Image (cartoon, rainbow, N blue to C red; front, side, top):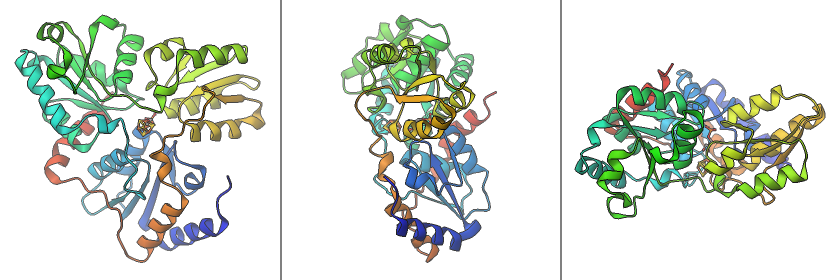
Length: 354
Ligand code: 13P
Ligand code: SF4
């Protein structure tokens, strides 16, 4: 739906008043009404790097979810303020790994005698606490655009990887991209004693996958892929690696949001695409590429937005920008120093990956 012209005007005026003091980052899953005010858009990797490259901006307004704003705070300098327009914009996947659960998991690995061989690799979609745990234990962060390089690096440091919190990104990268087998992977369930695994299973495993997932990407199924191939002959199926393994196996192409955009930019006129990722992005791409004769549809028949990404709407953005313009610092995201120190170590290892 078109955005309220009055709110558009207020956002524009507040942003103009702030000038260079504010820099607005927008994740690809944000609503059109918000993304129009982003100074840069990107996937979570690109946005983390871009946040760090703006030392002159006093305020970084992060139109995305909580873990992204935390990462931006960790990577920016101490006097820069990172602001999240709605504090309730979390991520259900990130919430699936708490600091207590992960500490308990490490105890289980220690008990089984494998902790020394394990290198943690944590998906960007995790809290700053989990990133700090990762840094403390010699591990790295990864995003969907560098998971393979992160895993390759980790297997140079140790024999096993604890991958968290997204089991699908971990499994898909290990099996589809790196030639491991499904048997090399075990699933650690934080709600079961010892993760539901025996010490022997932990000793045999190469990849210890945390039992977390994205509920948005979890909705795509093998049926979605088969149905769309029947409906649209010749369709290219392109999905995000947070999708289930069977969906990724059945797809033609797999990649991060940034990869999806590049693939569609490079696609020839007349080509047809079914995209398995969040709906705001898919709709925007369908509209953008329709004039070039590229047919782009959503992979599933039912709609699926990321409800927390959608919490950042134009009214929240207007309120944020107007507050900042009036000198009121609202919704600041600030990671404590001790957490930041180790989380930064893990993030910097990612940024240094070849
Ligand atoms: P990317 O933008 O890294 O592809 O990640 C998708 C996502 O789910 C972010 O929450
Ligand atoms: Fe989290 Fe999934 Fe939403 Fe990304 S799309 S922010 S992983 S719930």
